[in-house]
Image 1 (cartoon, rainbow, N blue to C red):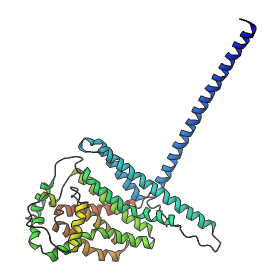
Image 2 (cartoon, rainbow, N blue to C red; image 1 turned 180 degrees about the vertical axis):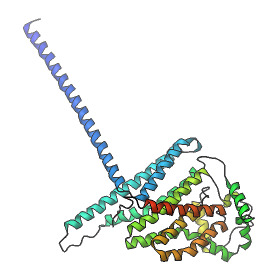
Image 3 (cartoon, one colour; image 1 turned 30 degrees about the horizontal axis):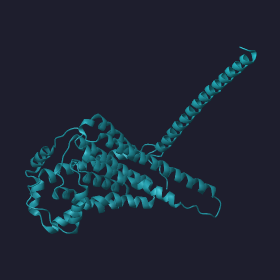
Image 4 (cartoon, helix red, strand yellow; image 1 turned 90 degrees about the vertical axis):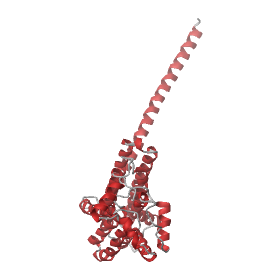
Length: 362
């Protein structure tokens, strides 16, 4: 091999070695950069989750705790469910929406506070923007949608532990307590006017929390507002868990065919029938969530707006009786709802004393 050829080969070898070295360095640098970016994304997500959790109050502690607990149960008893993966996905989605809502609303409130501080000492009045009002509103009123989601979901979770209905035990309890079957016995008093009144009383369940919540929201009493929501959340969660452990389908299902006829009435009866047609849950009758929610709101009125308590009281009592009269619950369901609603209030008062229970500002 001539000197020229030898030099040419050595030059090519050096070039290849240099290119390999550069390529190796580029790959290493690329790996470092990708790892740095990954760590940055993880750190950002962790930071945002931490801030979202810091924006949560007592109500979110209960709501997210229930979602996490029910997810654990779904995983543990997946073989008893038709679509466990979908249920877990729905739980995760709802939890994510709650965290995002809390985080965004707190951030919007922070921007408003910053602008207000910036304009202090000037004649300019800093008013909340449309976006800030939007997030503030939904931050406070989403609990009603959360309760509805959880209740409708119970139709899929009611047989999580046991496939058998437990209605016979509650029928026996009612018989032992009263000597009759109350749901069937009350049929002798059926009359279109009484039916209509009872259906109206049954519908009042939907307005107790809205009324006291709306009053406290309008007055800007945020501690009282979130206290009432937390009482309701705890009462409902207790009821949801009991419904999973002790599945009851209600007289409307278990005694089908025993009635002498439908409860005829007017517009309120028609409205209840329409709601039941599209929203009736097969199961989750014990304890009565209607009674639990109404009793929790009633206790909230007692503690935070005493005059409203006395307005609510006769309607709540009529509503409790109506749950049996309109064939949706046993007496045991009604008493169970009173107990869980009261426990929701008692536990909620204790929870609301914890630091960070109320984090939302006007």
